[in-house]
Length: 439
Ligand code: S3P
Image (cartoon, rainbow, N blue to C red):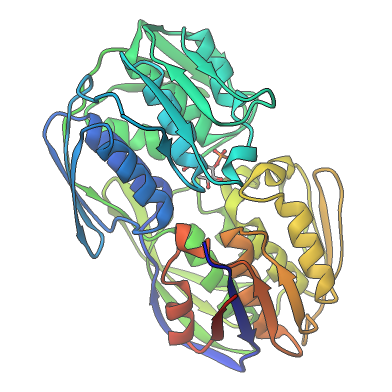
């Protein structure tokens, strides 16, 4: 991939309306469940980012007919629960942890062998959290010695288990739910912390019974899925960059339309409000089984807070941009229980700390904690930061430039295309100035 460099400039004011692209988590699941369903699924609002396209290509490689019409419209001709065919080559899911972990669950119970691979970042990420419980269900999956991909999967008959998730991970929960469809008997999954519930919601939408008893989910094997149309809401994780941009810009106001507000996803709004952010939730409604709203956001004087640990898994992907907000908030912001940030697309605690310090911010990361002393007025010097190929780090520092003394140069931005290919265009449309060059 070419190395893309961004140069983001301070800007006095933002204004306008933004419609962020479709939710990444829901787009992946729509392809997967559509592929396993009986009948035809029409998806609208599909995220045309590299990650979701990787999921689409992987299912096409297993014989599923999927038509990509563009502009977020996709038609999936379901192959049925037992209709996937053996792929003839390893399935390369690029940067996408969601594709790899959720597909491991689907592939574990197939009557064929398959291999999952990804890019340099994904090949470093922990996979035992998925392969170990799948092995308890009877799966045979080999990882590298370090517990990373490639995942060599020999499909086996599976059986239900009772399992308590050791981490609050929707990817792990979803892998086990999907494997549970192929298992004999019932699979019981107990969560110890809240994680996004898109899989449960969508499975139910496709007619699968997923029972919930307190923190325990139960799914009976052998249930067939019935195709239905999926309307994908805007991605709150993408909206978060514009939320913070509008809050920290010296002046102005943005309207963010059609943002997914699932309560297991949208804690970023609560956290930013607790920091003094002026965010109005308007026109709440439901789309495709998910809560959606429009968000009006005004430039605000933020102050530091201690972030409630219970909100961490519900805002897990938003911490890079929350750290930027914290650097612009008067006083100290503290967060803890951030261990999962170390195993995302990059070590987000280390990479954010290095970038914030390069821009003159007083901050300190512990093993799973972060402390940031923020400032009103100019919060960052100009300078250069490394995104380490992490899309959310790149977009976070592009937003930080709004409150910098001089332009911020961000290295290695090509992976923004994994989750938000239109970010730069939308940002420029509301008054940000981000130049792009290719190295
Ligand atoms: C995702 C779950 C989260 C999140 C990721 C997408 C999903 O990961 O970080 O970007 O779609 O299920 P974990 O479940 O591992 O926390």
